Length: 190
Image (tube, rainbow, N blue to C red; front, side):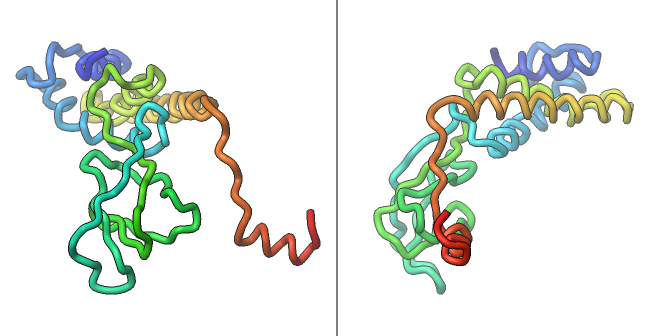
């Protein structure tokens, strides 16, 4: 599966002409090329896909934040979204490509920008093609009906893909704290 194959899945759903490359000199190729990377990153960022999860120890930056936080770390270049840190109760804020906090030795679990389509999960690929078809529907067909159908299809495919992806591995534990502890104290032990 290649980026062109994924775009062609989207174009086929719309009944549009297929392309040979993203740099081909025709309108469909130009449209696909202009939205492919952003759409891929958008679908990646929207769910913690197992194939796109990475872990990293962050490098401390030599400069400190102007106020509020005492340390700042450089996020990995391929980081699309931070999912968790090595300390479950650590407070932090993401600003630009930096993580600001008051802790040392920060490690993160994050969604990584995966650009090699051979690394994509098959259900992610289908969801990405559906999202592309939704974005391309009106510009290519000028049909609101087809746009609505493509948008609906994307939602259905995405729900199935997230469900399957979320069932791989042991579920993350539910952490007690905050309102759960407050309710236990108010009502007695559960």
